Image (tube, rainbow, N blue to C red; front, side):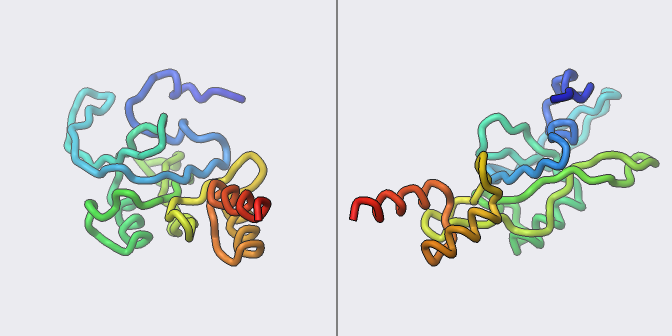
Length: 159
């Protein structure tokens, strides 16, 4: 695996360099708040920031474009309602600072949700979220996360 040079600057906030090539991050919003963010040039400004439930994920500064996409995906403009909900982040080429650069964007689709426990379905080492959704729907008649799938498999085996 190669290391992007910006990873070594230990930035506090998530950036495109925190993604592997073609990676999607399916994350659960823990909190949305405003905080003072200091730019590399030393200036500071109040920004919207999302923190995530997933351990090890950096906070994400939410620009207007991404906030509008989250509003569309979650069907609410109220940031307080975003907590506990899932979003998908990807890196795309965007126009910023007068040039084409990598930027984080919220995908305009909602992550799949387990019909049993309501958790967001994430991929595992063998299957993508879509494959898990399709396989569990076919086998159990409903969309399940890997954990609920394992529980139901265990119940079926013990019957």
